[in-house]
Length: 84
Image 1: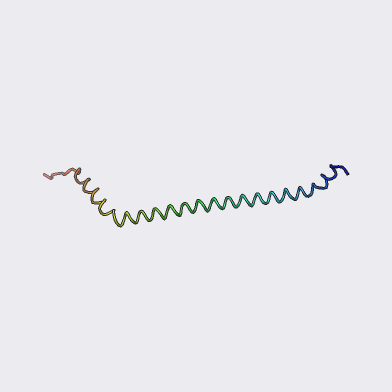
Image 2 (image 1 turned 135 degrees about the vertical axis):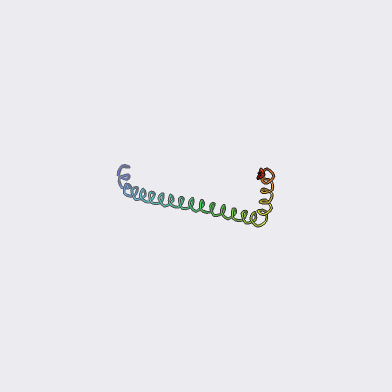
């Protein structure tokens, strides 16, 4: 037998392997896309949680004093109009 006869015998196996490779690469692509989606959603969730925690601390402990300070500074520059 010649080598070309062996290659012709292996063609159906090669076609099946190509199909398996195609399906495996599609599955890997879908897994990577799902992982990236999960990663982005996790980052958004963590950012929201950190922002909510920082905002809660600000609102509970600093907002009243900072508001009074800003209003005091704005009131010093406010023009007073004297009614005649």
